[in-house]
Image 1 (cartoon, rainbow, N blue to C red):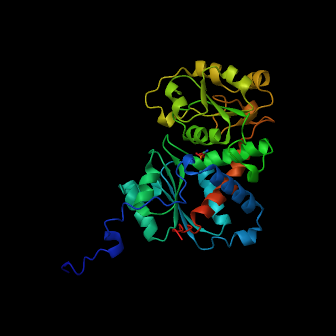
Image 2 (cartoon, rainbow, N blue to C red):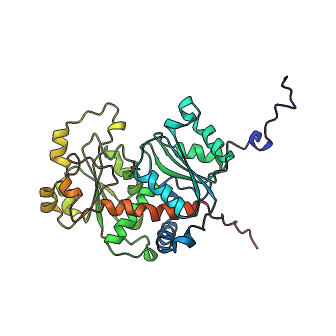
Image 3 (cartoon, rainbow, N blue to C red):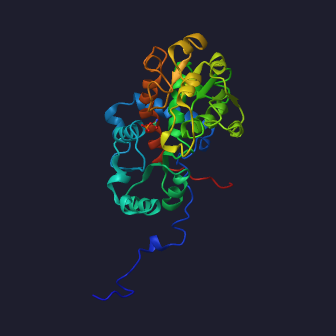
Length: 342
Ligand code: CP
C-alpha cells in the first residue's frame, strides 16, 4: 500500500498549533501557592463533607469519569490514597508506572500525557523525579494535573493533608480557616529540607495561615537562602532550640535518591538532629510529631517517637484520602465561567 496525503491524515485537533501550549487548567494542583486561603478552606470543607458522605451517594459523584495515575517514581501513601480517593468517588482509575509502560521504551512525558488524554483521561495525577514536570504535562494536555510530588519542588496534596492533621490537633474547624488560624503556632520542619518537596509545599502554605515555621538542619540540607522562600520562615541550626519553641515538629528523612554527592557524617547527623524519646521528652514533651513518610527508623526518628503517643504519622496517612477526594472532585468539577461586564 502506498501512503498518500489522503491516507496519512493527522487528526485535526492534534495538529492544531495551540495543542501543546494550552493554558494550565484552573483546577490543577501543582503548587501549594495555587490555592488562596479561601480555596484552602473550601478544599478542607469539601474533604470533611466527602469523608462524612454516604458511601453509595459518594460513589456516584464521579461515576465513570476517568482518572489516570502517572507515576515515574515509587510511592506507597500518595499513590494508594489518590487511587482510593478517586475510586471512592466512583471514578475509573488506571495506573501507568514508568516500569511497566512505553515510558520504558523512551516515550516522553508529553506523548504519554497526550496518549492518556486520547484514551479518555479527564485528570492526570503525576509523580515525577523532575521538578516542574507537572507544568509541562498541564500545558501539553490542558487537563487538570494533580501534582503527586515533582522532584525537589512540591507536594501540595501532602501539605494540605498535613494542614488537616494540624487543624485536628489544634481543634480548629475547617470552616473557620483564615490568614490568622495558625497565629501563635510554631512548627519546626527538621531534616533534609533541601531535597524535600514536602518541606517546600508546607513552607509555602503554613505561614500564609499565620504559622511561624522554623526550618532546621545542617547547611548541607538547609542553605541559608531557604529562609527567603516565603515570609514567615526562620532558620535554626540547633534542633534543641527549635524544639523548645515548637508545638509541632515535622521530621524528614534524608533523601538518599537525590543526594548527588552531598557528604554527611550520619553519626553526627543523628546526634544533632534525630527525634529520639529523650530529646523530645526534655524539649517538647507535648509537641505533635509528624513525618510525611517513608520513615527511616533509627535515622531521623526513633521507633519510640514514631510509635509514641504524640505521633500523628498514621493520622497524616489517614487524612490523605479525604484531602485527595476533595482534590479529585475539584479537578473534575465544572469551571465557573468568568462573568463579563453587565
Ligand atoms: N509522603 C509520601 O509522599 O509518601 P509516598 O512516597 O509513599 O507517596
